Length: 127
Ligand code: HEC
View 1 (cartoon, rainbow, N blue to C red):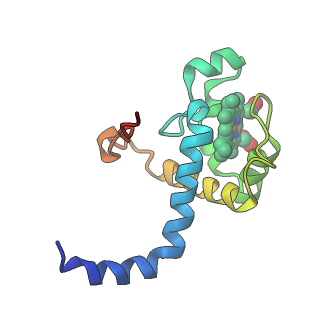
View 2: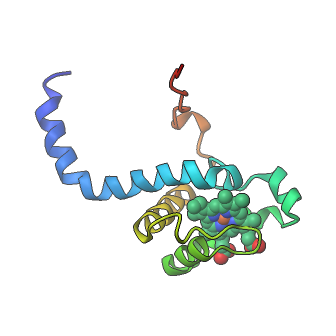
């Protein structure tokens, strides 16, 4: 494993910009969006009933959402929409752009991405 360290350093230095943005977006998504939009971005069906919105409105992987421009998705996230809360003031513009980027990756994984491909985050044993 150790021989990978130097190589890994190079790779991570080269990739640091792109990976960081997406990673940050993922973290934000998991903290702020997953409860409504689901881990896979397809929306929380139970909540869509509570909100009385069509489940497809909460499906961020849908074509109708994905054809929108980044600015529009950033705008929806920062200003909110319908039952969705506004995140301006809670998230920086950079975080919002990052989370939009992450939402795009969810849509790309759309054709039946097996749940297993993402290792379930195990809660750290905090005591
Ligand atoms: C409290 C639940 C809730 C949370 C939390 C939430 N959303 Fe939403 N979101 C919704 C609902 C409901 C809609 C559908 C709004 C509508 O069309 O009426 C929506 C719609 C959207 C849309 C589509 C807007 C459009 O133009 O069609 C985007 C993009 C979006 N959410 C991104 C996010 C992101 C990113 C986060 C996390 C930062 C987030 N949402 C957190 C409930 C939520």
